[in-house]
Length: 129
Image 1 (cartoon, rainbow, N blue to C red):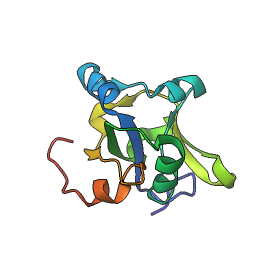
Image 2 (cartoon, rainbow, N blue to C red; image 1 turned 120 degrees about the vertical axis):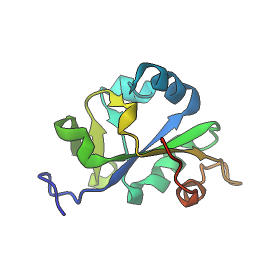
Image 3 (cartoon, rainbow, N blue to C red; image 1 turned 90 degrees about the horizontal axis):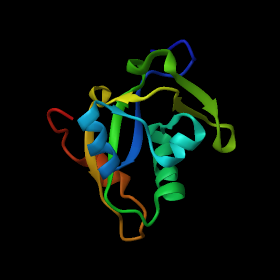
C-alpha cells in the first residue's frame, strides 16, 4: 500500500531520551528533543535509516528508548522531506501524542558505543507501549 506521498505506509521510529519521553507520558504529548525543537519538527527515521541515525546522532548516549509509530496515524502533520544524501525522512510538524506509539522499547548501547538497534527491534512487543 502506498500513501499520498508515494511512500509505502509503515512504521517510523524515534530515538528518544528516556527522561524526556517519561515527561511526555505525563502530559500526553512529546514535543521532541532539543534538536527537534531547534529545527521546528520532530525527526523520525524509517527502518532503513535507523542504524545510520543511531550511529550519527546518538553514539555514546545512554538511557535511550526506541519509539515505533505507524506513519499513517500522524496524518498531514507528517512530511517526507529530503535530508541525508537526498533520502526522504519523516518529519512531524506537530507534537507527537504519546498514544500514537505502537510500542516503546529500551535502546541499549552496543559495545561500540552506538545504540543497538537490532537488540531493540528483536525485543518482544510490550502491551500498552
